[in-house]
Image (cartoon, rainbow, N blue to C red; front, side, top):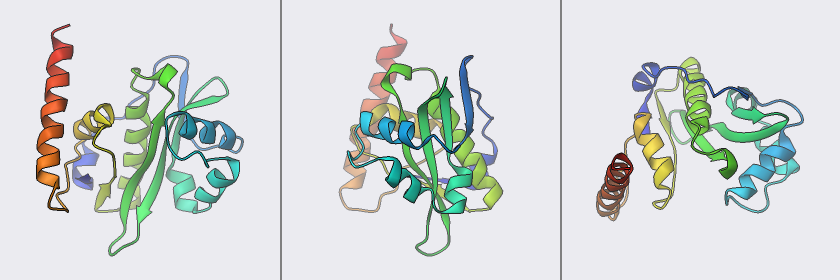
Length: 175
């Protein structure tokens, strides 16, 4: 998925609910961040060392955001970059603790990272996701991201995804 940075500029800043704090990475977040990535189904090899390695890039460290609840990191998003051709920002490894979902925390971290990318001056931001991650896809679409049709099977897949996203929105509206 991709979004032009011009569209990102129009996004309103989002603050988390009371009791939650949106902030940059801080030393000491590594274990909590790694545990969160494991808990939501990213690779089991996320640990303090891997988070440290991933944050060695100064720009990624500066732009990545977390939402904390007490001393625990409960929502995260890395600010990565694509170095193939012109630099492009990458919304990377977005995750929210299942116990804290439904509170807009992913929107907070994603919007904050997108705003960071406006300051860096990248022309576009991209992300990769899986077809079954419908709540995440709905969030990304609401942030202005659009599907990228880079393979032959993509139009059919996105047609199915958009129907599922639409039907799940309609079923929620009926409740």
